[in-house]
Length: 253
Image (cartoon, rainbow, N blue to C red; front, side, top):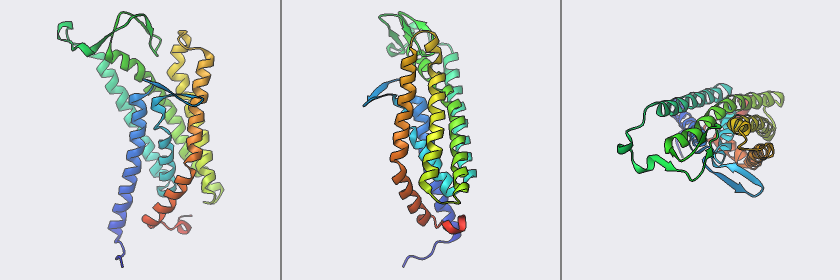
């Protein structure tokens, strides 16, 4: 028979699980900022930026932390993610502000030759050649700013709504608070991030309003489908973690 855990061992087990959930949350969020809109993919009727693929995982992690550890821990994790967003923007800005090496010392992959003028996501028109970093900066900096603003609105909204529904249902109907909080917050996220990321490109004439609406709809549809599909894994994870971390649901509520 396995001996009972000491309080110190139980606390360490709980901290390890929180670290894993926070790690997945921050990794998924960082991937969104790194690969962002560098490529668009077609998933059935949905046209998606490749950076969106890991992002729904952040809402699953937020809901798990909210359910297992409470609102304070969930808000702490979201705040750390916000600080990371600011750090990413700062590094991108510094890298873009520093001068390039001399042309004769420049490695061949640092600049790209263009066959025609290209309108970047920030509305800038470039022709002939462009530095690879300038292209990456144009494709990611606006997306990072957009994702940060959307992140503030959506993630804090998700945590607040999750606990609102939890209080309203007195801790019952786990599926309800998981789905309602996620579906609303992802709608906020999709509208905000697409509007800010492609706003300049829209006004520069590089993207039309129907294309903008397709991107918003595809973005939200993908997140909505993933949110509904992850209901069963969410139930399973909550059930297992409550047992593994020795959380008494009756005492908790």
